[in-house]
Length: 633
View 1 (tube, helix red, strand yellow):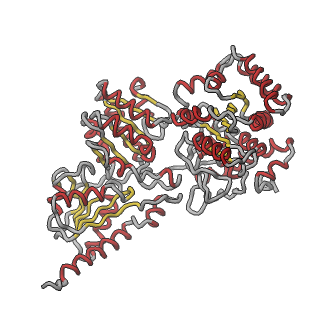
View 2 (cartoon, rainbow, N blue to C red):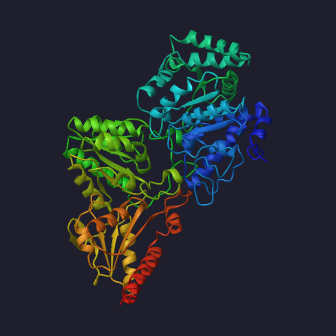
View 3 (cartoon, one colour):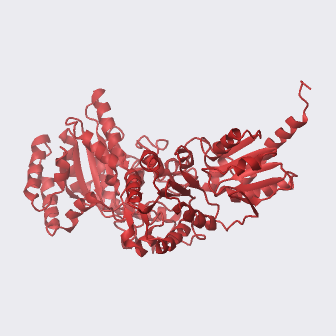
């Protein structure tokens, strides 16, 4: 039995002798590379936190002490050390989640993929323990991969610092990166540690001194504090935190497990809020990850574990289509600028950045700031394109509403990974954006069905200079272009039915499914017309006119059903006094477990087969009601 296999929980880890830990670290890294190579997942971040996670579980008593990972994609090693070593179906249906999951283990406290939240959770936990008289419990927040660039962290730090007698341990996992190198003043401040000529000497001094400091509360802490003060002229990372009133330990070599243990014990025994600053290397211990300049294999697909090279994917992605069009537009329009929230490569803005390096802004993991900064850029005469994941637009709703729309600014949001994304679980599905954007006055929303529609919609949105606009598209390969056979107002007619039986309104990626639904229904003798609106907000009034006389109107979308396109179509018909039965199909308003996109669509009834069955049944009911004489007659 290997060392890793012998660990069923943190207690087993604590019983290991110090001499065996390097072998354990190597086994964990070998396990991670082998497992993630088969399924894909967040490899680089987890290779970088092996020693740190081992030290955390040897020092603290999880789950009594609450260890919170920010963001949760750093928790693979934590899973391995808390009894979850079956990674065969990592991020697949029925397998281990790629993020902490309360359903999996009592050691998983928060189910987070949205960054910069753990410090607020930790603040609340510490307050709860104090009020309940639960002395000796610790809230430990591991904040890394750029999470400190999020404003919520600093709101939390301001409050944590006020609780001098509340034990909150903040572990800054400083690897200088989120997906790509971390951007901003904070990143620059922390980077001073890595570029100061005296850093290595100072780090050696810390490593040699920390183990000799007695573990004895305030006196010992002040000894370490004095050591740091002596280094302050050379290294000043503590000034930023100590000005907030937070005690600081560091810098610590994040790959020296014993130094980490000593530092964490010091922080644990202090009795108040403490920052432990650990410097780690993303992708540590795996050559291909270290050599990957783009993101150190942050979110890898399946790959060859010997070389690190990804296995061939299928087709051009939606993201790539957007990326190419942005480069072309950038060459034509000097007023177009790009904004990303620490995801330059994942959202497809890297090529634009290379072509127009003076017109790209990476604001870090700070979607709220991205939105209002975009409003400022628009006020200054530019047209910003804010490219983020659809699920992260939730975080900037107030800014979209009050800072952009209220001021009628031309800002375009490009929302990648919209709808059901699958593998990353509940918090990554982009199923709220169409609903929340329906509330924004003046907002224009385009949902492309194919690559050609994406290109034309992007240009249409960039021509809107007096209101916000948005385009959303799913993860994965783009489908073949779906030609229109006609037009109704600004809407494309995709399938023209011979009779007015069913009018099927389809949004975006669901157009391809709607075409298959129409084929199925036509074979059953039900004529179906499929239309694709240019914008799902505002809807073209021609849709209401077109719906007149149909036996049934159906709407299908890849978003939560509440308040989205289906509800907007129903409202349009009501306002126009068009009395036609309507059925809406979308994602149920619930958090979806991780699985492949097609598996989730099957579970929630959004496959062409399911939709055809439901629409056939709904149409049959309408026909039956119409043919059944009323009692009054």
